[in-house]
Image (tube, rainbow, N blue to C red; front, top):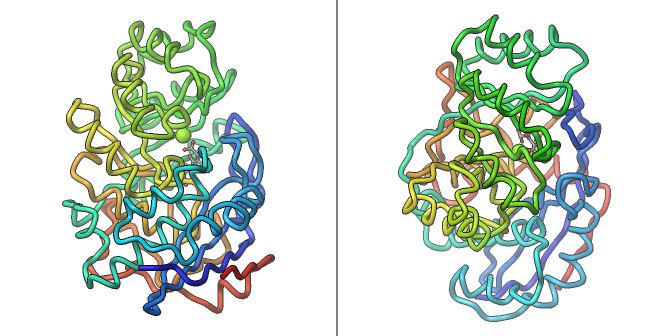
Length: 369
Ligand code: OSB
Ligand code: MG
């Protein structure tokens, strides 16, 4: 198989609400949609869902456009390959840039799904027919406002609540949620905002029976996570720290976490996600799928990866219309009253791409061949 044409769309759908974490506030989130066409005329779409600024990972939306155009396209256009593994080997010279790689890798999975007439779930080896989902609640102005959102999402069926924390916005909030909602499945995500000096905060959080604490410490410090995990019983879940199956191997070896959040975008696609998933499964580390506020295109791949057997905790899967005025797919995924999303079982993305919408929200377009 060969890719004969790549089209990059930098797309910006207006946000309905901003999203605040310890690293900053997202008020607009352009994303990159990657469309590929093969020599046999098959078409696939993927999403490189980096953030517009380098506060989560160094890669940004504009960097994805640049890397896809200048470095990825020349390595892959018109090159022969038979499998995704072979395709990813073409990308080996490029260090990191996992969001960029994911954009094109996902598009290729879609092509393979169409070519073999098998659903993505089947191709990847998924076993769940539906996936459990939760919501990620950003940092708000007040505790009251946060409690209202927890309430709303609970009544909508979401199966667990994740709140973003940062120093000064942690224990009081968790305490208020426990007081009002009792023993609901609850977790926190610090996005690297703390250091080992904050051990008192974590010892205190240990009293609130949290499902997990996501990425408490620096993204490049697996050792300190290991030191912290030895001192608290709440499971540490790594997000930013895990960019590859190699990172996962080291984290597991050092006992730096008990859970891993495997987002395809952060690790470079579905194939690497599957490798991390398999390693975790062997080592009794449960996993789940986080999100990058993707459009319906990126979310479709997150749903697929979540169908793998060791994805045992609810995914961050707020519907696209929580955050955005519109979507790029027709009939986006639906969260049922019990908080489950059905995994599509037809070949292709599983959702119908709305080309008109892509056109409408495109702010930059590049055709590469
Ligand atoms: O840390 O999980 C995170 C959004 C952007 C960047 C990082 C994170 C998040 C979220 C939102 O928590 C999850 C979602 O896409 O719904
Ligand atoms: Mg996170």
